[in-house]
Length: 125
Image (cartoon, rainbow, N blue to C red):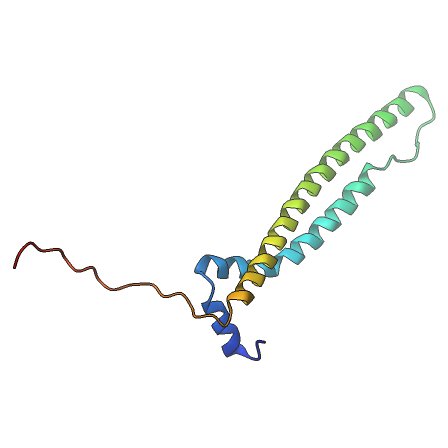
C-alpha cells in the first residue's frame, strides 16, 4: 500500500491539519499507558494491608487505622487511574478510526479549497 516516504506524505495530504496532529499524538499514548500501568501496580501494592507490627492495644489500633486509611486512599487512586486509562483507550480508538478513515480516503483525490480572492460586486457598468 504505502511503499515510501512519498506515499506517506501523500497519505498525510489527505488528512486535515487537525487529523494530522491527532495522528501524530498517537505515538505517546503507549508510553502514557505504560506509566499508568506502573502507577496502578504501585497503588495496588500500597493498598494491601501491612503486617501487624504492634501487638498491644494502642499500637495495634493505630496500625489497623493506618492500614484502613492506606487502603481507602489506594482505592481512590486506582479508580482515578482506571478512569484515566479508559480515556486513554478512547483516544487510542479515535486514533485508530482516524487512521482507518485516512487509509480509506487514500488514493481518492485530495479535497480542494477555493482560495481565490472574492470578486467585488458592482452595480451596472
